[in-house]
Image (cartoon, rainbow, N blue to C red):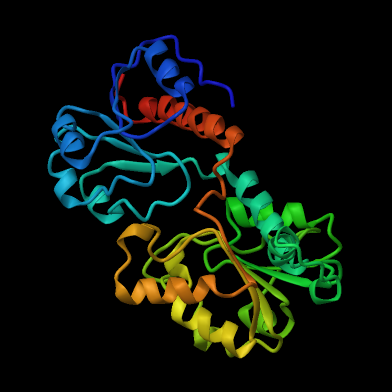
Length: 325
């Protein structure tokens, strides 16, 4: 990304409360912004630092709710370093005329690459095979794989990450279907825009790339699963609560789900699971055809830099639109 040229200084007071690449702080300072960088700040420290700040830059850990916004007497921009906006009360922010944006385009390739990697691990039993060989067990037939070529992959949500995943799949000789409630006419040589009815009929693999909203909470459940004609592989690299864990386990136990790859969980604070969550997590871990990773889709060395570059460009551009100079 290239910085927006701006010969005039931008007198923004910026509060950054998570780990971002130095290019963001350096770029903002270069353009005349006053930057307070508190990457390890807790909520109390964030609340204390918010007054008189024009811009708040966050990642995942900071919950921007009404109580926090009540302390933001000058806030005009909330910049989310990443894609998901579910930790921001967007309705409350809009009421206060606060502009919110993310950097979803910055880590879409990273999410897409991990989606493909996890899918290939599932189809080729690589998780189980790796564990067995390390334990001195050599079983070729039991770990016979399934080729991706010739399969039908259904992508739910055709935004930055969904479209990037379709692009990665283009070399794999698969048929790619995509459904997005809020987009249309996006079909091209890579992807066929389709309805849920077509997905239920044709899909071998289902991959979620949607934000977490009231509409998408528990989007995947037993009712949805039971409409599929085939048994399927499931990928979720969006948000944990898009998939109902109880229903996922039921599908695995019934054989309707042939394998699942999850980069996200309903509760990702594993040391704070309640009794029911702990039982579900332990059951999930017992399945050899389930691959889990700690929400690292989109979190690469390259995306770490690109996210800050995208935010810098957007902050400089939005500062002009909001006449903050």
